[in-house]
Amino acid sequence: MSASDIEISVLGGLAEIDPDVWDACACPEAVDGARAIDPFTTYRFLRALEDSGSVGPGTGWQPHHLVARAGDEVIAVAPMYAKGHSQGEYIFDHNWAHAWERAGGRYYPKLQIAVPFTPATGRRFLTKPGQEDRGFQALVQGVLHVGMENRLSSAHATFCTEDEATRGAEMGLLHRVTQQYHWVNDGYGTFDDFLAALSSRKRKTIRKERRTAHDFGGEIVQYSGNDLGPEHWDAFWQFYQDTGARKWGTPYLTRSFFDHAQQTLRDDMLLVLALEDGRPVAGALNFIGRDVLFGRYWGAVEQFPCLHFELCYYQAIDYAIKHGLRAVEAGAQGEHKLARGYLPVECHSLHWMADEGFSTAVSDYLEAEKRAVSGDIEILTTYGPFKKITQEPT
Image 1 (cartoon, rainbow, N blue to C red):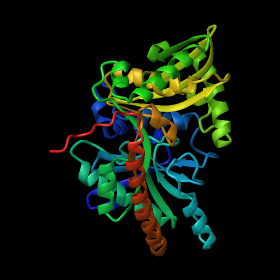
Image 2: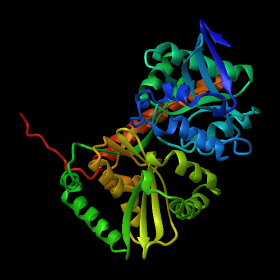
Image 3: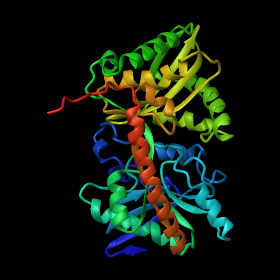
């Protein structure tokens, strides 16, 4: 298929494209060895999902990646999957699926432009520098062409950037707004500087939680890069299995993913472990972007008071402050994050529905949802832990 002078093709997997060609679109800022802004759209991360069997046959995530070429040059790519369910997305459309199928339609398979199992905001339409406009337009047109040619119900680009959402809406896609909780670094030099920005009561609560967590009877250690070894993934796999079984029924990632991660992703990861007599008893896995730390997974084989808060939230803040990162994204959901300095922010996604009437109904729903999310963010922010600043009347 083609859009003007641009040819769009679909890949059955990342093995069909050169890593450098993909990353020239996904993370051009990292071509000279610098850290990628978004670790999740890099070739190495997405390829690890495929090579480990975390996505692919039998998972409901079948790769159908888009590639846009102008002549012999790849100018844009997008991680796209044919989905046989709505699991592992974190932008929930189960009600849409139920409504469509009750009306006699077939909602699955659908198209999903996303990073599997990863509720982290980033570019989804990955364009080379200088090719942003025509690359984005070509990829969007390519998605719609694939959807219509295969008579699919819908296509979705989840956790895209606000700029992508705005541009997609201008092309006729539906723009959805949801929310997450992020911690933002306001130029803090130390964790105590962050605490100083909180109300007295919240500051005391966090200090108490940190003391309680560190009194669990062991030590808390951060590992990244070459400090990580296969033994750490043996331990973390136990934590991940426990959390995955409780949250999703079965874990999304295979054990093999962590072996691939050790080989190709260890510089992108921060693993925080709680050790009791040298034995890991709990852990939290983060991914490191150029200016954001992304909290991803947590688990434990023993339960200790406040250890979850320490490993997942406070250790992440410590790391972000020490390394001058702009923010910590702590994953999906969780109002308990609010009291710990993580404030609500908007997240964005784009949607296309093949049926015009259904698209109109979804559009009406999204307008109402957007108003509700905006109101929730405003209210929740007022309940945040930060000091209230009052201005004297003039």
